[in-house]
Length: 327
Image (cartoon, rainbow, N blue to C red):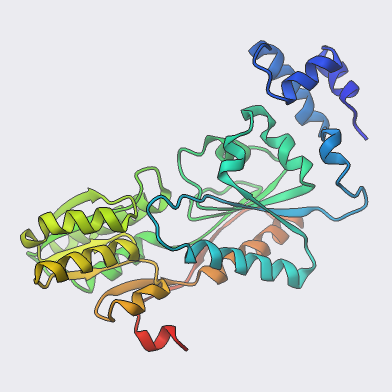
């Protein structure tokens, strides 16, 4: 087993310096940190505190990385379904898993991220909710030592597969259900740092070119509250409100009801709570459970030496009824 002395020898520093770097001491030069972490990564060193929990004969685990941000979202159905799909498939295959949240990585020193995943005895990572600002995970994707299945981010490498629905096409199709040529359309986009937000925005802009309607875009941040308050201010000026998430569609619907006006609204995601607000809102129904399930199969492919690929999952346009969610 690789020891801290091996790392020190490779980096040409003392074992004490290696220990300080791994513990995040700030009185170490950047050059020394870089040399130590390069040695750690090259040797695959795992700190003793973590190594003691690992079985040298055990199978490698799959780490499931989830980006959690519930400052605005009132439900977390999507992440739960992703998790259940991945966990059920791993259970079927007898694969151990460990769940990692974005906040965990945010507390780590940048250069210790690879070492942290090594300490979990994981050789593969399923990434749910990746955004463009998550530099820690984006840098992780450059490491050939791990296999990755990434959801909702169009990233493909030899050791990285991406799994998602065609976001552009889905946004185009659901919005086309309510928009007619000449309409004035208000569009609530998602988070500006999100890959899915960008793709969905491209979908509505393509529909605008094809149908020649007036389009106003507001950054809705996937927030029900933002959509609700902005709709109260602006709804009277528009014929349609297209939302890049169901939660924003619910906020817009509530605001229109309070204003006593009818505006055509569409959502995106197909979450169950839509069945409690009425079936008049068309949405994109995607099967999050199946996406999580398929991610595990992609990891198995990559473990077997096959190259990463883009996996496009099916979706459907639906109006979710109350009866459908109580079955």
